[in-house]
Image (cartoon, rainbow, N blue to C red; front, top):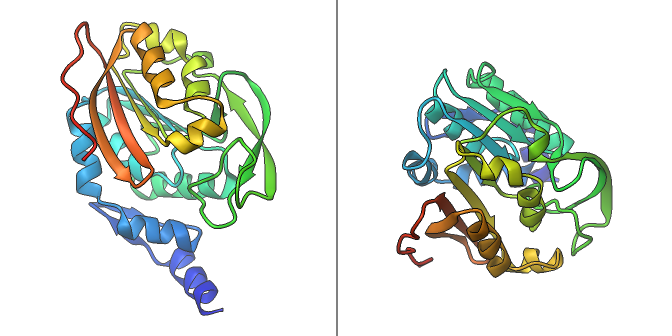
Length: 246
């Protein structure tokens, strides 16, 4: 009862500080995620990749922590297109974008990116609003129907694509092949969970192999959590030495 009351009071009414930005969350787990997130570390990862004036795709934006950083880096001449299918997350995302003055450069899509354009079942985690996914796994008794579309259906050409979609990464990449092939696209950042990829019948090796066929090579790996790591793929002719996950 106290946790529920704490969550209602703090998350609906009290803002959290995330670096220089103000963030509000709709659930206790998202509020804690803001408190535990290291804005400086996330920002430093993007600073070497994102340029002023870039057009970015933020696929799996959740409540917008990465979106705010990306919107700040692209500046008022740039654009960020964000995808978030879960309605509550999406509402928090839009509110956070508005509260931080980024409506002029962020385009919000209340849907997911995939390899088709249709309606799909999104299985909702009971305990973690950052862990909804398209396979029926643990703690996902509830499902909701959401819109999905391909990155290739968008009119923009993206300079950088960030993907964090709980195992659905390969489908997102397959739905964006033309965007990836375009000369303007120079980097893709993918959060990898081998366990979640396995639920969707793929592996990290398959993602790396797919990206190499399009001219992207891993330039950096960063451990995020025990079962997660980020890979930065850059479109370069010769692969750089890859930094370990440690």
